Image 1 (cartoon, rainbow, N blue to C red):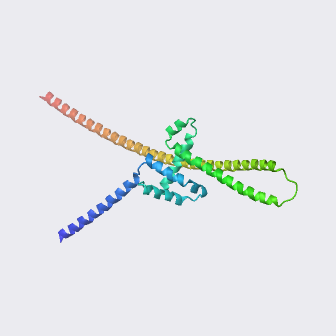
Image 2: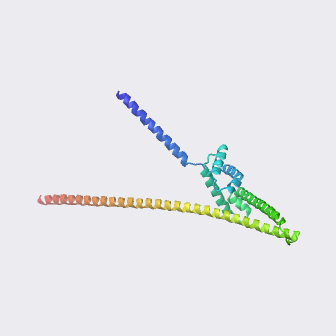
Length: 259
């Protein structure tokens, strides 16, 4: 009976150890996320470029990032939607930083994905311009249809066309500049968000370092106090020994004198 209880106890202990080991393995796998390789980043940018028009149409893009995550998993790269989103923000930040470099070759040297992002943003500008032109053509068609029903004096055909074309170009440029400003604001907001996160992490790190330093100082103080107490005990012990030796010597001296 005692052997049976011992066997059951051992079995429970072994089962618990297996669960603990599995939990530790899961924790290690979560903490050790692999770095993005160059090929993985290239694949990610290709998928992101395909979906860039969809990102421009909506601000609720959670499903788009999940779709990119699924596409990457199909290619053998296990990345979550949130990881893909953060990777895109990091790449855009580095791209904006390289725009200050004048020489094209140095940009590519400093940031190997500069050309990939430049292609995405160039295609975005072209799409925006085409859309603006298309919208202006529709507006112009509706405007001309209304003008046909009106009576009165009108400007000559060539002069009217020239004025309308000039106004259209101005409107297109205004819309384009407005969208550029919006993109710049979004980029600055993302940059400020990253800077705030960096500041918070730095403050947390400083607090941790200060706590460790305070703990080290307290340990040093306690060690010094113990050393001081030990020194005092050693000195007292030495004094007692010296007093004992002196007493013995005096006694021996008196005994010699008596003889």
